Amino acid sequence: MRTLIRVLVAATFVLWLAPSVPAQETDGAHRVRAGETLWDLAAHYLTDPFRWPEIFELNPDVVEDPHWIYPGETLRLPGAGRVPDRLGDAERMREPVEAGAPVSAENRPAIRTQETRRTAASERSGEFPEASIFRQPISASTSVLSVSDVEPRPIVSTSDFYSASILADRTTFPTVGVTERLVAENPLNLRLPPAVRAHDEVIVRVTALSVEVGDDLQAVRWGRALPPVGHVLHSMAHLRVTRAFGDSVRAEVRRLFANYRVGDPVIAAAEYTVLPGVVPEPESAGLVGSILGFEIEQTLVGTGEKLFVDRGTAHGVRVGDEFAVFSATEADPMRALGEDRVATVRVIRATELAATAMVIDLRDPGMRPGVPVRRVKRMVE
Image (tube, rainbow, N blue to C red; front, side, top):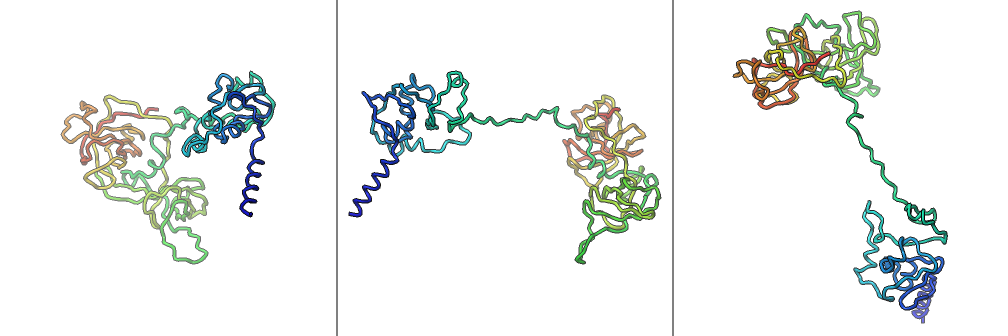
């Protein structure tokens, strides 16, 4: 008895949920009444609302848009009562539409929620009314970045400029102070390592009274000698003075390049004058010189490494100039072809008698001091 009651209740519930579409089938056709949709007709005649495309495909001459069917239209019907296959139309229509796929008759149910009809003009425009559950696809705006919109960059960056070691005589780069100590906030009295990091602050004991707030300084360390020009001066850090106390200054570590430590001398930083967008121009019969040595003593070099050329500002060399490096067997670098070069280097710092250059193109890593170079591109004012 209980089983029978349950069956009757379930049947009543199914009938209550069934669409209220009156049967108006006449010789396999249905005359549309107000409020009906393809979804409702498929549920009534085909036992499955997901089979609405079958009705739509049978009536291309009557239904232009599956969203809208109108009272008085006569629609042909497929075989009523057919139960869809397990993997047939109903299951296929239940599959999720792939993200980004265009909405079409194959992947959308036709539902109309009110009797208000669009005019022929609005139908042709492709707009959906406010009451429709479908809306016009939102077109994603595409931002096209033009090359002309990109800010031009200097051919030598500030980091490359200030990090470069230089070759000079000690007397031409007098110190303005010595790194006295690191300003380390340590409220818990922890045993912190004495390493200096970027954005730390240091106290510099100055020997020149001309150092003021806002001045740029450079922490350096002298290295090996490279005759006949002088010694290698390594860059440790780029500093900026934040406070001045007369016999000392407080400076922020803007950039850290090496193992900067207390006791390192400090010099006045060179002025960075490379303008964005300015590039060197080709030069056919350029300045000839040779390689004095490398920033780090080595036999093989790679791109990004630095070397010293025996030509400087006294010879017209400027930051941004490019030199072709030739093999030691090249007797006349002035007549040598660009194809014969073993490397191309770009000047990133220049002193009076020498220039520091970075390897930007390499064909043979086996360069050594004494090989000839020739300027092939020159920065012009």
